[in-house]
Image 1: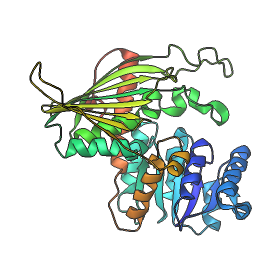
Image 2: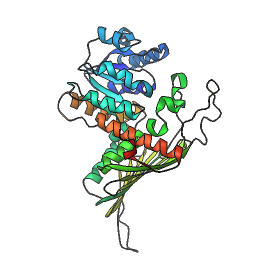
Image 3: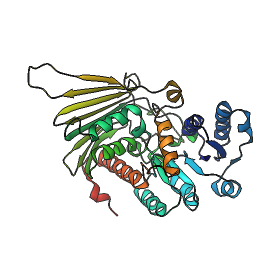
Length: 362
């Protein structure tokens, strides 16, 4: 499978390292208008594939690349606000496309992409890595297999480091990212939708910029991205989901903690520990038969990225779908719904009110 990389910054480096773990894959072209990012990508390619990486051509725009390149697939890891325009010429090809999250920064643009992906020969996949972390995958399997009974509550916690620096500091402003609740939290809204398997109805988010980036200035502008929030999503089957985000808690032992509670048991999993805990209900005063399990990930896969092996396992699933051996697990429609929830959360935090998803229709 011959890959094109569009956008060669931080996330592209992770894709390069993971592609190198899969026999039969190669990178045949790079696209990025920023010279320093191209240099960075070539250094990573050289580390992973040797000196032959020096011969991989680079381009500043998609049309020039398409005119000169034979390939099978493309990974889009460019800044959020570029996704819509980057995708337009690529959707006119038969290339298999993996577009990093969020699909787009607005509902209008994401809806347009959903329309344009219909009827294509090549597959279209939205990069929602969190589904593919092995401990999270096992957590989801347990829920879907009914191990906790009927799911009633889902809580997702991410206590982590602030946003990293990006080229041009584009990720410091809502106009470029769609807002933190779109940029960062679309992963978690996608997890909610995937786990609960029902329609989200309403969103309430309390969030603000309280600690990070407050002393930074970009042409005298102060960053406006949320750095912590609580979000509650109600689904039409009665399940409640909560997202607890804090981006000034990098000292936390677990970066992610997922908790699901059904009418039979409670299930928890932590990242990076990989520890899964199953706690069935018992009568008051009775011994608690808690079961613990550690979900391991190979060291080479962990070392290839910052998503606990998820980028590697997502890549394998993408390749299976492109070869016709499996279905597309994260569709453009999935990406749109995650963006819609993120936009609703941004509105809710700003206007301090509950937002119904029906408000965003049309």
